[in-house]
Image (cartoon, rainbow, N blue to C red):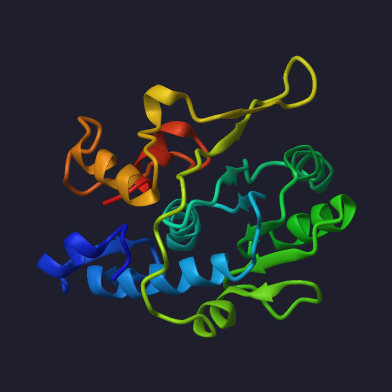
Length: 219
């Protein structure tokens, strides 16, 4: 079972774990999906490089962030309002190794990746597009075994709006990131923290904001 969801999946396997306007995943299904995603991310051998998430709110947006958290990979939550040129700057500045996109952002995301020299673009629910890896195929090809969890956790890399110049990247503040020596310890701290209220959560704002991202750091 995925370290991020194993506890709840074991207790309530058939209860609703994650949903958007299109899909509903039980905790058991969510656990399996996160295992596959975590292994797919680890297969990239990123060596500390980050992955950007450039997509509107969706179940996949949450899954991309959470899967990376669970395998010690830092994600860059990017506003889906940005142009390809604006996103390209962030990809270059952050040293991103890849970018996740949805159907609404695939064209801008692919254009930005080309500008920034980023080879990996993974898109969910996208029509077959040159240079874009199908999220669904990428997920299906990954093993469902629990990924390793002994690596150190890494915070999100947030970018400012750039109203006073170019956007600047900053890690999640220590007060909002539980830390720990390993991902396992990090998620245990998240579960024990006051910010984790242990009930359903509804994202009514963009998931690229820090507040909404508190929902995708553990169960």
